Length: 218
Ligand SMILES: [Zn+2]
Image (cartoon, rainbow, N blue to C red):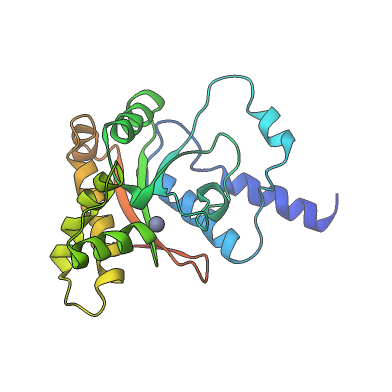
């Protein structure tokens, strides 16, 4: 076995420590962030080949985290956390806006699959938050279901204030916090969160460096 291969396998062992249904939120978060460090350092261990799919094809899935992120094509969640098949559940909507389908999906993952960690991941230069800023500035609410996205993001923008020169980056952070807060009081999540069996955390992805920073570092 080559040194490189051995190092890779050792990395995979340590990368599996948080990988158990019913594990702690802390272990799950450490696992997720370790994957992001591998990604940022250019040393991912999961190449997403078909053998990874086959390895998880039999038996039940046992993901250890669920990540809710934006649809932005520059923020592929499995890649930026260097996660393989079966490791995390991923939900993506414009500006990680919640609706009943999103909340129901998270409730399922936490309640039925025993996942201890929910991460809401915003990102710099988010177009959805930018669209809400523009809509509020122009006083024009978009049509269709796009209005739902703007309506859900608008409170974060207004809390920061349209006059703030840094309204976009500040509203992006504010909107992550609001999304985290909403999930913490969700009907089926509030109990496990209060009992500290489940954690809901907010993060921010830096498009330039690939780094994920927690809004409230633990
Ligand atoms: Zn976005």
